Length: 327
Image: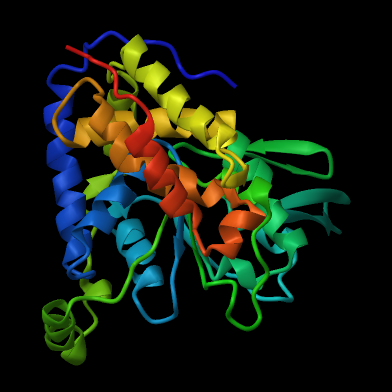
C-alpha cells in the first residue's frame, strides 16, 4: 500500500468553505462536550481524512457523548451499536432472511449501513464479533452469504472502549486496531469545565437539543477538498521516515504498517486544511504522529519492563527523526 501521489494545490476557495463548515460542526460538538477542544479537532480531522476513530478511556468521561455529538451535528444516517458479549457478527452486518411470500432470501441490512456508526464499548464483544468490522472499515463494503454490498460515503466508525484492565473486556486484535486512523483519550475534565458541565447538564440534556449544522453533501465536498491538499515529496519522505523508525526501534516489537503511513498522510492533509492551508508541512505530521501511530505499536519486553509505553517511545522517535527543509 503506497502513499498517495502529489495533488496540485488547486483547492482554492473550497478551503474557506471547509473551515467555515468545520467550525460550525466543532462549535456544535463543544456545546455538548466542554473543555475538550483538542479532542474535538482531532475527531474532525479523522472525519475529513475518511478514517475511523477509537476513543479509549475510563467510563463516565464523555466518550459516547463525543461520538453522538458528532453524529447529531451532521444531517446523515447514524446508527449506534452497543457491543455486548452476546452480540453476533450478523447483528452488525445484517442477515439474509427467507421470505415465505416470495420464496426467496432477502437481505436485511444491519446497523453498519449508515454514514456514521457509533460502536459503544467495542471491546466488550467477542473477537469474532469485533472482526465483523474489518471489511467494513477497510473496503467500505459488507459481504454476506457471498454477496457484496457497498456502503455509502462518507462512512466513519467511531468506537469507544474501556481500558483492557477493566472487567469484561476483550483486547482488540492488531488487525482491528490498525484500521482505526487514530486513537484518543478523553481524560478527566478541568475543574472549571466540570463545574460548567454541572450547570449545563444538571438541569437539561444538551445532546437532545443539538441540531444538524452540516449536510452529508457538505461533508462529502469537504472530503474532496481535503484530497486536493498538496503533499510535497519531502513531506512524504518524512512520513515514511517516521514510520520506518518505529519498525527499527529496539523498544518496539511491532512497528507501524504501510496502512499507518497512508493514514498519517491523509490525516495530515485534513489537519492542514482545518488550519486553512492547501499544503502539508512537517508540523502536521508531528502533531498527528502519536494519535495515528501509537495504538498500532507493541512495546518490546525490555520496554514493558521499564514501563515505557508506545506513546513515550514514539514521542522520542519524532524528536530524533530529521525534519526536512520544505522552504
